[in-house]
Length: 228
Image (tube, rainbow, N blue to C red; front, side):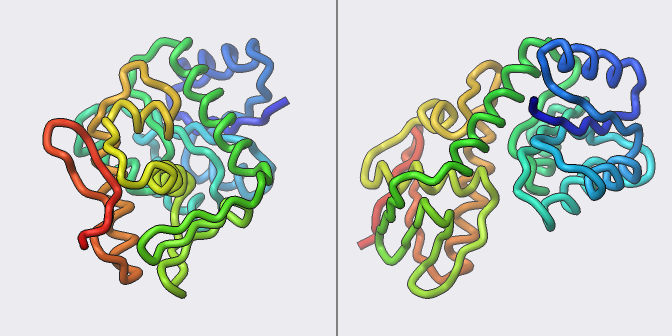
C-alpha cells in the first residue's frame, strides 16, 4: 500500500482527498500546516507528497523547497492560483506536477498514479543504459548526469526530460509529445509547463558548461541538437 502525506489546511478539502484516496487503497497521513507537514515528513516514510501552496505559517512553496533538499519524492502541488507565473513558481521549487483547485477527484488520482508509476520506473534498475550527446553523459542505472567531468544535479522531472531528449536527439518533438512522455497525464496539462521545465534544464546544463543543446522550433516544440 502506497503511503501519501497530504499537507492541506482546509479541513473540508483534506477530508475529501483523504477519504477518496483511502477508498483507492492508499494510506494517507494528513497535516494541516507546513510545520506539521514537515515534521510528519521527517518522522515518516512516504511514497508521495500532496501539498497545498496556500498554507498558514510555512507556505507550501517553502515545504517543497525543504523537501527537495532531502528527497526526490514525487510531489504534487495543489493551487487555487492557476496563472502561468504561479505555476512556474511552484514548479521551480521542485514540484513534479500541479493541480488547480477546484479539481475533479478522478484527475487527482490519475496524477497521483502517474507520478507513482514514474517514480517506480526511476527506482528500477534497467539495463544500465548510458546515453551520450555532445559532451553530455547520462547513466540510467545510477541516475547521474555529467557534462564532460562536471556533475549536473537534476530533479526527477528534469532528469526524465533530459532522458527523453537524449533518446530522441536530433528529432523534433512537440510539446504534447513531451507531456505524454515525461508527465504521462495529458488532461488539462498546460503546454506552458514544458516551456518552464525546458528553461530550468537549459540553465542547469549551461551552468555546468554545456553549450545550448535544446533548441526551440517555433510553432512546433523542441529539438536536441549540437549548435555546430
